[in-house]
Image 1 (tube, one colour):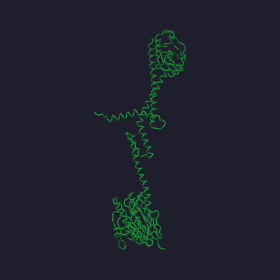
Image 2 (cartoon, helix red, strand yellow):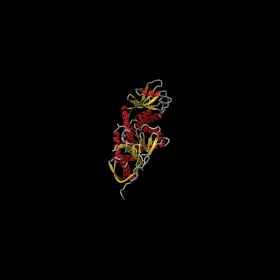
Image 3 (cartoon, helix red, strand yellow):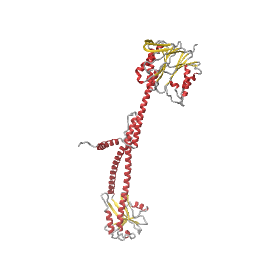
Length: 566
């Protein structure tokens, strides 16, 4: 047989050991920190005060009941013995027997004197009489032998007895009175035929009676001390069961409030406190999720700032030309982009693009596409192989040649290199972009362009739309060795070139209607005086159309106008 122990027995022994060893120490440390606000100490005080109140009330009831029991038993015993005396039923029996021998009454007083104990001593016992028509009391006693004698009484407690008689002190009643250090127990012996009132008075020695009371107080404080200990133990048990989980809950919430979201409240019960702990854990979990979202939003805001750096801060200024742009992302970051920059030979590069998908991924590729186009278009020369191009005047092709970037047609070949780079290095991600890349000769107004799957740009004149710059090839980055044609147009004085992404025409109203090209074309009549005014007209009309509807896609516009010759 092995020495293995039942796990439940081992657990119980461990819990008992913690309670015996750690419990009193923890309890004492908690008690010493009484000045700190704590629900545990509050419960302890409640139990202490409640225990004291119950103990004091019980002690009071016990003392009253013990006093009444003592008076009743002693009074009944004395009255019973007095009633057995011969001829005691005659009217004023005690008064008639003054000066006569009464051994039976003498035995009664001897019996009363024998009631002394270790706590109190009967110092005197006698009969007392008060006439019905007077207030003076006389003392009837046995000074020598068993012959009754009567003398004036000087017991100060008799004044209180007079007050008791005014309150109808009945025959079966007895009372304990104390005046001027004299403690006397009076038992009513008045018969039904008696004209006077008769009592037996038992005087107790003051010192011994005080010692008796002190002994009772010692017992009282002993019970009080025991009650306090019991109250503290009960409070400690209830604190461990009720207050300790609440304090643990409070500590956890305090740490969470300070930013420590790794905290959790242990679930030890299935009552309201356990449910509260479960709710706190749920709340902390939601706070963790909220914190994670806030961190993502912070990173997105950083990404938004960085992405805006990829867009031109200011647009180039050329004599007799105006360039304006509008950019409004649907989220924190965007896959749309536009660009306008001067090339080394003095021509102007115009770019507008839309990366597929949305979010952070499209924003990163937007930066990559924009950077590649700029780099490849501004190089002094680059190696081009296996490419084919075509203009409006005829096709052009080459097996392998070095192209001078100062030639407008050659700069547009940057689209081919961008396509090859994305397809070969990031083809597995399946990311691509629709791109319009044009090279403008400011002097002649001639625009050479490649439209890689982008929305057709509009050439707007004084009579409205006079041309569409349709796609000349597929979207950029889909596959390697893609074929792109190069077209060109000439912008006359006053013409406006409008490029935009599909977020413009596919914008939706609160009634889920599309904006459409028809609404856009309606804004060209009457013709706008400048590119900036046309952009403002489209922007205000678009925002009024969208109103409170959510923006589902990024919106980007690029407007270029050739000024009228003077």
